[in-house]
Image (spheres, one colour):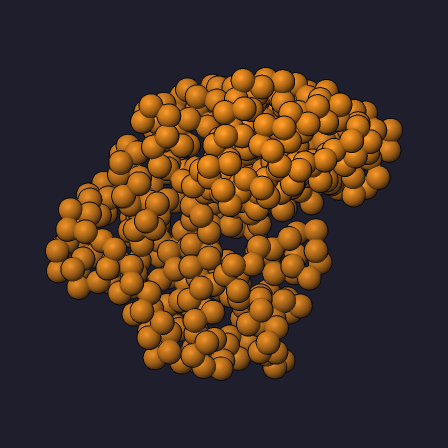
Length: 444
């Protein structure tokens, strides 16, 4: 079988999320749950469909940006739809400026996305509270925001967010106006949108409504109210409000909050006493430094399925030399990625930009060198010492170390039967500074 280059190039785009409801995307999916330390999507889905189908649940999901969270959330969406739940998935970053987010922004984004989705399937709502609110906003901001009682709620909210997204000054004025009305907005979302929607959905044979809010993990960690970081303010200080939606909700939250001193407060206020689910990396090594064959086998399949999605897994291995000059070159790519899905695809994409498959080892090494050197530029002197500690102790302590090491992709998180452990990004492990400064390194 010959490789179709344009299709392969498109499939390797690291910016593309696999939408599991789309058969063309679904053929590229590899299930890593067996090596990631738990069936996270199955746990989220089981909580909704089996344990609490009638009572609203609020679940939290986190992990490195680029580790595959959105793909897993699309898989959750597809599974719940098979069980007759109506699922609204949306990317909050489309509505919000992630550097400047407040509670009212999130609530309006939820209201817009849910109402727009319902309108698209012929469920129209009569948002009396919002009609009055928009009339007040129109007068307050002196901007045209029309919404009759019979009008579409999503259109009105979209006009407001479009008006404020590119104007921090207008956005701040609106927030000051909406802040004392937060409880009213929350009540209106429940009584004018969610509750009537669930009633109409059940009349159509659905089991309930699930809202999946992706990309909130990208909220900027800058300080806001009283020195609190923006994630702490939104998800801890205001977490109890975000939890009050009267439908099943899944929020993505910043990984930094797992390392916060107020982690337990987050778990109780927003999670209702339940810990967030974390999506770790795909392990290429075990914590004792030996190669992890199951993880490597799945990463090889991830690459090969992008080239030959319709070929059976075992048969794909016979086609390696259509894509790489040897299996050693493919293994090298998998190892240096550290099991970070987007980085692996990014390296593969860069190889495609340099030459046609089968990729030579020299091409891959050139791509790796560029990635490694770019990454090393960002590491400061004291951070090399931190990296040394992580390698020796396999742990990250506290939010400061998280911000320094994990957010910068210097360190990755893994899970095994003993729990979580941390390892250095394999590309950094190859730098002369690391190789010379820390004894006992194993070259990836």
